[in-house]
Image (tube, rainbow, N blue to C red):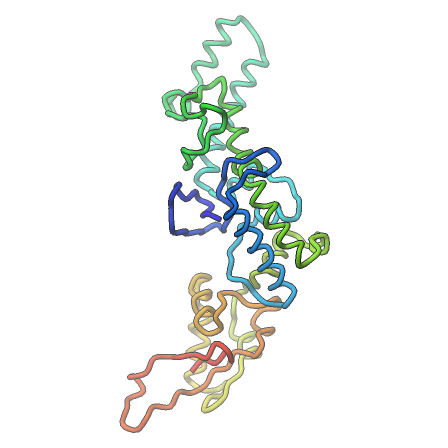
Length: 305
């Protein structure tokens, strides 16, 4: 897997703000020809996710929405490229508009010289396609050639549509078919994959990785437990609830990871956390200031001290 914004070849660390999706790898049309280790890892991940689903466990694996669409057998489009990488999606969208304008000019017909001149005048923000310096390799992955000898084939206005088609295909199907197949095979070894077709991609995300919800004081008061020195009316509890209800999504993930070991909640949210998140008073030892202590947790019991 790689970051959806395009980890460069050879990268060892991943930052995936838009979710994880397989990094395109050259392979045969049927998905065979992957390195054995890659196929094994994707198969293992499929088994892991299916077993977690079977055991009602959450997996801290931020798969991108298009991955779930692939798993369900849905067709992927340019919108999914935008979901994986907004920057790349915007760039390809501008080029697609240019290719459509060329197609419209050619389709309208006219004198060959006039058509050729009109097509040659097409530019992207004043720059011709040739001067953009593209070749038939996958953006961000120069080792992935879209056609034989693609590194030596220049993208121009006349072959731009073909280039865009090949890029989309490499990103969403041809370059990831084997990885998705290995994941599906691993998943199917544990859970019949037909059993999950009733769910939407968003619902699968919740089932696999847990729910996202905005917290408010009312729901938290009813979902949390207070013990060993605290009640729901304690001043410290009130301050904690104020802070929690004001957390950003990223801060809430970090807080949940700290107190439960998982960055997301089970299906049903905070109310379905088992055991319930319990807030308890940490009493200082004799002669020690309370300010000398930091909050601590017992993730096995969902205890926040």
